[in-house]
Image (cartoon, rainbow, N blue to C red; front, side, top):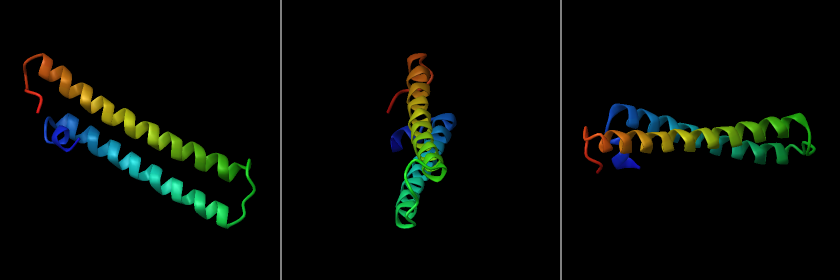
Length: 84
């Protein structure tokens, strides 16, 4: 993934945004512990919001990283840049 980030600026930006989204997902996962420690009942809006934010951030992160890989492969296929 780091070699991918060394390539085109577009790929690098997508990888960085993807890693930031994955880091945010970890933060939301830690918030789950705080909700549990606060004895917030399950199936309430705080749990729903936490789940949506965490899963959404994780999904977005992997989509951005996958898009970065696709950009590198497509540009390499067109002969503009070798894949490292």
